[in-house]
Amino acid sequence: MLTDNHFNNGLLLLSYLVIAADGVLDESEGEALRKICQQEGISAEYLGNFIRYAKVLPEKEVYKKALEEIEMCGDEEKLRAFGWLYRISEVDGKVHVKEIRFLMYSLKKAGIEFEDIITAKEKLPALF
Image 1 (cartoon, rainbow, N blue to C red):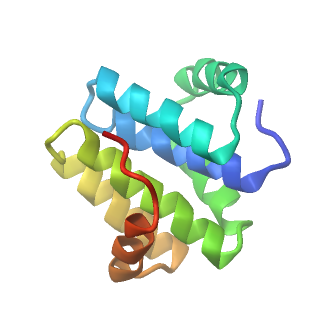
Image 2 (image 1 turned 120 degrees about the vertical axis):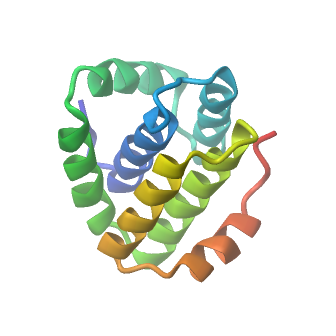
């Protein structure tokens, strides 16, 4: 189901994990993901197919694939992807502990500093 666009793949995989981290697929988070897709030129059809694909995979497999895809991105793409993830985590008004843990661990694996993500996030449009 993944394409040859590593940024889109990594962004969607990681976004899916952040949205599902607290065990609740909040409608505001789903709307945020749709807005991100619009900003990044990802079609609604592809997003729908992706969600069906990700739902059947174990969480560990989604995470492994997400990190593999992000590793193939350039530094600017990585920062943009994690900036979007930070934006998603803020959408429902409460940042869940598991979301923060996931973000921090993912940043470490990707070799990105948290402060850089704050800066990257500020360059992206708000989602709510």
